[in-house]
Length: 442
Image (cartoon, rainbow, N blue to C red; front, side, top):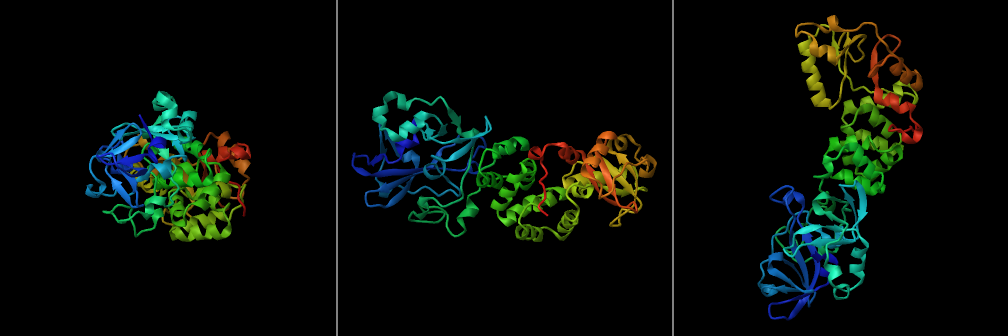
């Protein structure tokens, strides 16, 4: 077993035994660059600093480890430089002594050492006290115990790195450029430092939110950076209210807006209501006109009211639609909006901005209806509704009393304004510290 703590600074000799420099870093290609997804990870290059201060990228296959010395199979000037890999991970500067996420136990950990096989396969990280001791004591003093596999080894493939997105000291290597000895140059370094998201994205949003609660807001933002917009949105909605605000402030405006677009309008309104007004307006400007209009309308309602709880993400169709047409419209709605509709609201004219509500059809009834039946035939006319100004607690009690999954919000003229879903109603009944929905500032 090789340990990064013993490799860093180790003497590098040529085939004749002459010292030519020391090892300063081990670089690893990101998961996306591997030929076999989920397969073993090998070092992509070793960084060697020569006696004259010159730095070299050396392929690991050209180096043999003997005791505590690295021996080159041929002279440094004769070694062809390996091709640089975009987004390479620096074990010395981005992993060692940094925090990472143990995906098995779903918790952040401190990286005390990195373990490698003699063939330069990255095995995992060591979070034990022995990992710290190896960095403080020479290898010869630790003896055989220092070469044993750690009991608290976390496999590399079950690890998520919390990379900070800042240039490492090695960015200044000579021969910059994609084919040279250094790292890519030209674009902002931050654009190239998106962390891998493979195994992390396989966890449930609530589980990832639990991990984020154990991190700083900046680290939580970095974790979301590596995920697609829909997954990041699902996770953000599970994060506690205070941390949601901090994370949104840490993300770039463009990235934050992209995540907000994947959220329901009521969730966006509640999040923006907690941000400083200047930041909220900045994000609103990055939304589409239709999205920002829906959010601005929701922000006008009082916080503890049906209007403050409701969402405008619902499906309203005219009563003349057949059940077959309604199912197709529902399919498109779910694909386009990513929602989880349980009712179709039947209105007098689906093209109007504020159509009058006539009835409601549950998805279950729609599924068993004959294709030619119209929504007007299927709908329930005995409606339970609430007004926009209704108290939030009364809305939650109404949903519970009538065993509803959502309740429509209508104005005095009977025009449909939005719906309050059961998850948001339950949120009202929870203690403030356990609510998903933020308390608004304005």
